[in-house]
Image 1 (tube, one colour):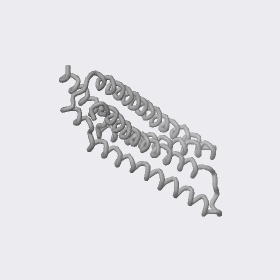
Image 2 (cartoon, one colour):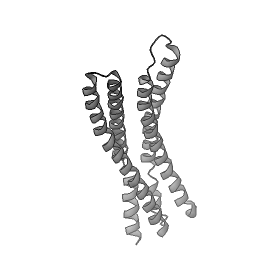
Image 3 (cartoon, one colour):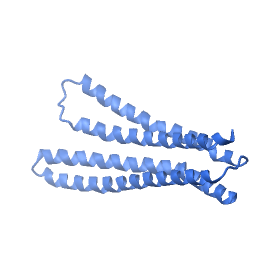
Image 4 (cartoon, one colour):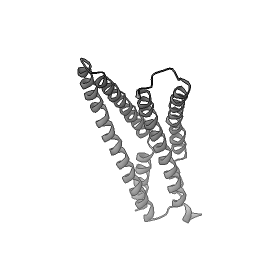
Length: 184
């Protein structure tokens, strides 16, 4: 039973902290941001009227084609991660193996997720900060709201992707510490 437990914990740790999972989350975030940009372009075209309604329809169709699959993919990834963490807790609760349990710490992968998750957070801070600075310092430019919509569309998904990566890494670290609390 300990061998089955070890295989299951190893597979679930790999699934939870896979670098491919982090990169897939980034890709889906990028597709979401692209869809947001198409939506803003479509709404701007609709506001201009006339022949621009054709462009508005095209942009909004492209926006839906990017936003809907990316949101479904993000939702599926969040559910998969939640289920993997639940199973990780259940398998870990079966028994203890002091000799082999140290390998589930996954220190390198946790640090990878922590450090790589700071990149989208820094990007969100840079985009949001530059948008606010531009809005505060430019008094002569026409403020139609599209700049704010673009800033929100770039800042919020980056911040959310970074926060999710940080939370995933810290949750695994917290799980491992509670997992090994009984063996110390």
